[in-house]
Length: 406
Ligand SMILES: Nc1ncnc2c1ncn2[C@@H]1O[C@H](COP(=O)(O)OP(=O)(O)OP(=O)(O)O)[C@@H](O)[C@H]1O
Ligand SMILES: [Mg+2]
Image 1 (cartoon, rainbow, N blue to C red):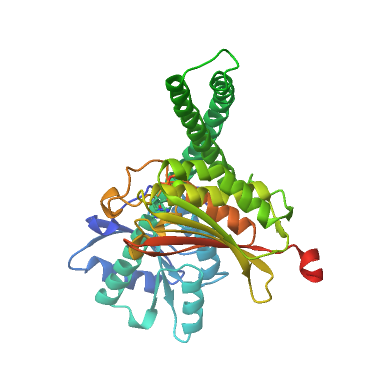
Image 2: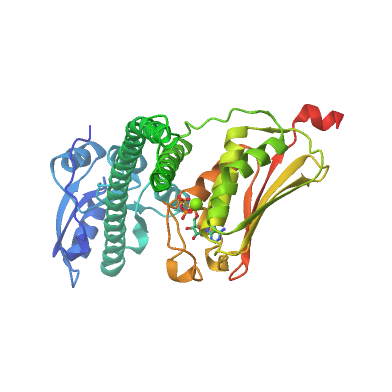
């Protein structure tokens, strides 16, 4: 029945003339409202009248009004029914609605307000001022409602666009990393073969140059893996391959990977572990990845001559977890940055890094490590003293079966 879509008016109160539709079956009452509105000092009202709900809805559908004055009792039909039709059809861009209630219909007025009326006025209190004020309030409320709704729509559209762009960027990262990884792997393989003398003997200088090339390949590969991991953690495509894992093996593999790197940076790397730790329930490759991220950071943010300790120990209330930690004597992190370092792409500004080496990397390591640990049901935490060093640690649950027999 209701088909008209009124145009959006941002601030209806700026209009000189307000168009009002009076729907009331009492002719005397209509006359009173018309006279009150015509006597208003600051505003001009253009008025249409209807003596029944049907007549009122026909007018409503054919013309555009700023406000509807709606009688609560309309003979065969109630004002509430008309109100429901108008509100249901167009909850936002409909005109303002003021209910005109008789004596003793205060509950009805409250009901009308709940159903969407913008204001109400008791017929016995109608005057030039009260009617003008009620219409002004209702029109202002309506303008506000429209403005909020249009801003919400704008935000929703902006949000949808951003989500779409975000998805596209993620897909782009993912495919670029994949496309680059394959040629990089064969490049590394060939460089390695030449380095090992497979293609003929090489001298020391050539060996050094090829070692640097291999390091660069490994660094690039780590960045590409970080990018794909970051995207798959974000999209929920990341899966752990849980198994019973020996913590001693994890330490051993990590140390073997990092010892030469620390040696070349002139930083001492040592390992401490409780004896005979039980097996853990974990994804071994991912735990090693987390330790690698922490050791790479410790190496990067500790000056030459410093030291780093990789530790594993029994933890948890019943010893049901293993705690791994990486402690360094590096530049440390100021308290105000301590929680930010786990955010994706966050890097503490160079000036605040207490003279650490030049920044490398993408700022992805800790965010990946944190999420991997969350997926293990653990948490990655940090304690740090600026200028003295940092300790990053996380716990991994002990394998259930072995926890019972240990
Ligand atoms: N051991 C540490 N000592 C001091 N600052 C650290 C340490 N580890 C991390 N940070 C700070 O936290 C930031 C974020 O670390 P994160 O590992 O996420 O990124 P990154 O190391 O800068 O780059 P990427 O890991 O992608 O190579 C670092 O840039 C650094 O400012
Ligand atoms: Mg890092």
